[in-house]
Amino acid sequence: MQVVKRLTSLDPAAIDGLAKLLASCFDLDDELYAALFGDAPDPLPLITLYFRSRGYESVRDDEVYVVEAAGLIVAAAIVVPPGPRRQREATPYSDELKRETPPDVTEKQKIFHEVVDELESEAFGDDTYYLSFLGVAPWARGKGLAGALLKHVVDRARADGRLVTVTTTTEGNIPMYEKFGFTGIQSAEVTLGRSRLDIWAMDNAASEGHL
Image 1 (cartoon, rainbow, N blue to C red):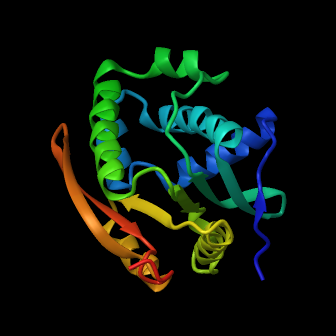
Image 2: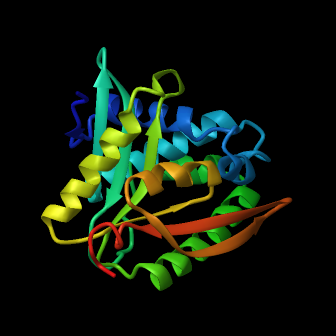
């Protein structure tokens, strides 16, 4: 049985462990992150820095659930709890990230988030638990870690009487979400430089009896 726990520490070592895990999951082999960061002069360190800032922000403001093995974070889920989306405050990594991110990468991120924010607003509103990241270290896949995290998030939301929502640009992830009772409810597309990506919005309303 996989042990899922909430990560609450803002200690640099904990944030670095989370960032390294996320960067190993969402690197240039991921179509979205290749589109967002692939044109940067040195994309992989930039992706890790991005996840340091985003990871710190998520531990501070959202809910981060992890599975550990041998003292390392090997899987993580980042969940935005219900409530109006608020302006995010700076993190200890914000200035460095801003300085190191090329303007064209910043512009592509802005375009992507505008499209996703509009899709989420239309499809979900703000009264759900929104699964913003779900990742498993490449070497730890096939062991049920993603399923354990997803079940934990669904149980968390159910106990609060709410749904879980997610968006994904990876079509191959859809069957896993469907296995846990998610269905597609809306989609959008976005063009980032030379890449055109589909974005699917899903929720678990049908499996939770919210028809």
